[in-house]
Image (tube, rainbow, N blue to C red; front, top):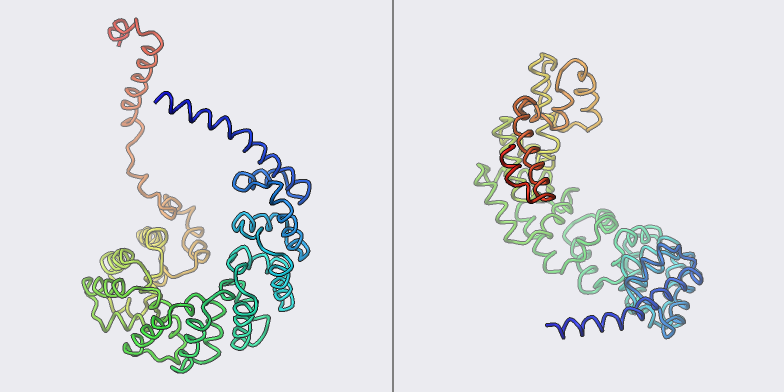
Length: 401
C-alpha cells in the first residue's frame, strides 16, 4: 500500500507542472490573442488545453468565426464543446458552411446559436445534408425568414433525417387532411415532433382518428404531439388510472379532444388533481371532463392556497354571491392577488400567510412550550464543549449539572 501511494504521489508531482504550464499557456493565448476576459479564459483552460501543436488550428478556426461577428466567448464555448473542430479544414469545411448560412439570413447571434446548440452541423456535408434540408424547409415555410425562425427554435433541422422522417411525416399529415398552413406553423414551433420515426407518426395519427379526431381540427396537431411523445404502455397506464378514479372512456376521450395537454400530465399529477377537485372541491367529473384545463393547474403551489384564501374570505362573509371556486382557480396570478388578497389583507388576519402557504404556522407551539426543550439542548451543548476542552472536569461537571 505504501509503495502504491508513493507511486501515485510521484505521478501527481510529475504531471502537475506540465498541466499547470499548459493551463497558463492556454489562458495567456485566450487573453492576449482572442481577447477573452481572464476569468473566462481560466474557466476554459480547466477542460481544454492549447499546445503549440494545436495553437495554429485554434487561431484559424477562431478567426474564421470571429470574421462573422460571433463573440469570442461563444467561439470558445463551441470549441470546448466540440474540440474536433480544430481538425477541420477552415477553407474547405467551415468557410463554405458559414457563407451559405450568411447568404440565407442566418447571421450574427443566430449563426452562433446554431453552432453552439447543434455542433453536429460541423460534421454534416454541405451539399448532401445542409442545403437539401434548407431547401425543403423553404418549400414548406415559404421564406428565408420563416426558415431562420424554425432553425433558431430547433437547430437540428439542418442535420435531421430529411428523407426518412421529416419529409415523409409532413407529406403524410397533409395527405391525411391536415391544412398545409397548420403543418407549416407546427414545423416552426415544434419541429421535434415532426422528426419522429415515420411509423410512429402513422400510428399516432391512426390512433387519434380511431378516437374520432378530425385532422382538419386546430387541436389535431396538439393531440399528435401528446400522443407521439408517449409510449403505448404509458398511454394505457394513464387511461387505466383515469378509469380507476371513476372516469369512463367516453369522459376521458371527450376531455382529451377538448384539450390534449391534460393527458400529458404525469400519472401522479392526475391522481392528486382528481382527488383535490373531486373530494376537496366537490366538483363533478362532468365539470372536469368539460374543462380539462383544470389538470394543467399547479395543485399545491396555486390551487390549494387559493382555495384556503377563498374559504377564509367566505368565513368572513367577504365573497360576493355567485362567485365559483373553479373561476377563482383559473384566474391569472395578478388578478387573484389584487382581487382577493391585497383588497382584504388589512382586514383579515392571517390572509397573507394563508396566501403564501404558511397556514401551518398558526398551529406551532408557543414560546413557553418550546423554551424548556431549547434550554435543555443549550445546556447539553455547554457541558459537552466544557468536557471537550477540560476532560478532567468530568466528575465536577456531572455533579454541578
